Amino acid sequence: MNSTSNTGNTGNTSNTGNTGNTSNTGDERRSRLTRRGFLGGITAAASAAILAACGDEAAAPTATVSRTTTTSGTTPPTAASAATTGGAGGVATVAKPATTGNNKPIQMLQATGMVDAADAEFKRQVAQWSKDANTPVNVEIVANTAIGDKIAAAVSAQSGADIVLLQDYEAWLYNSSLLDVTRTVDTLKTQLKGTYDTIDNNCKVNGVYRAIPFTFFPSAWIYRTDWLKEQGYDKFPATMDDLMKAGTKLKAAGHPIGWSLAASNGDARANCYSVLWNFGGKETDETGTKVTLNSPEALEALKWAQQFMKDACDPAGYAWDGSGNNRAYAAKTISATINGASVYIQAKTADPALAMATDNAISPKGPGGGAIYTPSRSYGVTKWSGNPDGAQALLTYLLQPEQHSAWLTTASGYNNGAYHAYDDAKVFKDDPKLAPYTLLLAQGKWPGYPGPPNQNAAKVWQQDVIVNMFAKVQSGIAPQEALTAADAQMKKLYAP
Image (cartoon, rainbow, N blue to C red; front, top):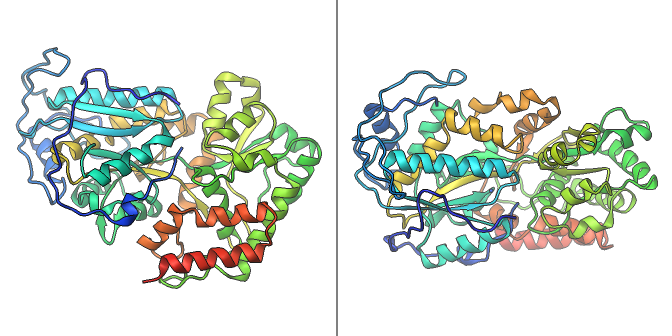
């Protein structure tokens, strides 16, 4: 992981003090989990349209473009750039933001990514917006394992970053500390052809958007085509039964599968939730109010997992951190694993021969179907922000095709766009092996599925009830015992 760093053009800036008087919930104070983070013309009218779409809790800024000096001391042009036309993929052009009359510094809390070039491109884009909007922006980049504690501390103090990077369900956990950004999200969804239910449900809390959808980093099966072919498979298994058979053969041949199982690990969640759903297991009924975890379908999922982990998997994987399976695959000690595209991307540079023998596949289906867990990231604007309009304008700018397409390209396929305008991103067309990562998004579900997203499901997700249930059967606890305990824990969390 990279150490904390700031954008080069902005220097160290501080946020204004706490301007809100919201109270913290117990969930917000709880320590957070570890995690793995248009061709736009500049016109006054378009800038006003963007900024008028910012949250209801902040007044719409003016459309005046005023550029004087940046924090780096250089002097940009003082006049507004001429308007240009155009777009990307039939998407309407939205301009870069003008200054709002509020040039207070913006503090952004960001986690390190898995692709260094994408992190560099992100910082470059933020610096460009900072210059154009004459608004200092300080990006604090911290390790994935540290950002949770950073946000928890900010929520507890009700001060700190204006923009916080959120993963999956975290907008539900911190919603009372996040601004209503519904107008901004609605504008982006209209412009960028809508988004996916999974990330939409992560960001929309009780009918109000508390976060702006930004990106997916879905998990597919990365596997060794040569080792699988040695066991008689030309393609990755399409069913859970076939995966069991193939995995058993691979381990017997000295090529076990890597299955992450450590709590608070995105890969572990992708493994466990997906297996539960694929066998027809459900945390709740469709109302999202009645806990239904203790079912024959969930029991079959746990029985399958217990056998799979014993007969097909490398036991070292149960304690891996977020990058443990990346390292194991690169070291050629495992034959397959669930992960984002970073495993394959890293091999393309570090070990071309390994990349040549690697392919990616969507998760096999079980008797309950092929639903999968798709990790995502979004951005929340905090209620204590001294510049909420500027914060939302910055995020709008980063999601425009000229910027976002460039960022997706430098991410090399690790990140997918959260909006349908990016479904056909060029990076996935250039390398057919990355195609499964685009197919996964439509299959994605959310914790608590098939019930609607809610605060209780977020608590279950935060406390890793489902992952811990699978970890128990791996340790030798009887599947029914693990299931009964998890069901009881869920009912306590769902209790009024």
